[in-house]
Image 1 (cartoon, rainbow, N blue to C red):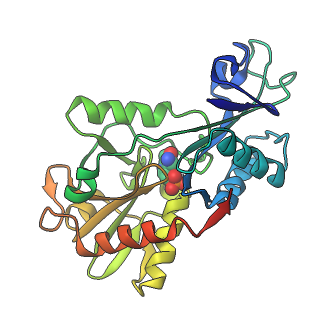
Image 2 (cartoon, rainbow, N blue to C red; image 1 turned 60 degrees about the vertical axis):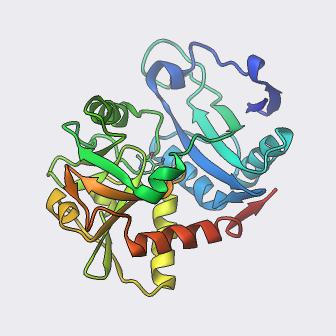
Length: 288
Ligand code: PMP
């Protein structure tokens, strides 16, 4: 396997970074998870835009422009003869001293890994996922905007551990007002009386690329979609619920906090979203 590391495609065994890299020492950096479907890098432009915004928000100057990053992503997929897979693009603050300050750090390290992806098993797309809300709250936007896709995922990792410890595969994370923020790596949608709802970004949700793709599908299907603050009650009483994310795509959720969503089966509209999303993924991106 070839890994892109600071301008070179190197063997996996040689793809190493310094222990003084602030990405390792402090989680100081940003990243994207991107999908490759039949030789088409899905929504690559949108992912790179989000990476640029994340980097700007943490005052990290990307060492490559959009086109250079695009080429590097495509080159990495080609070098691995991949036509389907998952791409992890990471930019860290780079090598520095042991102190927190990024002064003297750099240049930023750019890492691109293109590999197979471990999806949820297909039966969960047919039967739906059960989720549970957990005590760990989504980080407050005034501490670190959740819109920044940074290398600091401890908040989400703790939530995931809490869900797993009580037998669930995914955790529902609330913000400090008790509103729904998102799941640990996915955005949340519910369908209620024919209207699709998802929490607004200021509730603590990442501006998901899949979330945006689903909103586009809603408009194609003439289903009204609103960004609105949601509580657990709204999920418990919804007719349908699903999660969206690059790795999970669109996955039905059939139980929230031990309450069946709707009749406890993946919803009819959810299945339409899944089908339409799967139809679109080969068209909406950059071809290798
Ligand atoms: N929320 C979080 C916390 C995430 O890490 C992700 C990405 N895995 C998402 C939502 C979904 O975003 P996207 O659709 O861009 O993958």
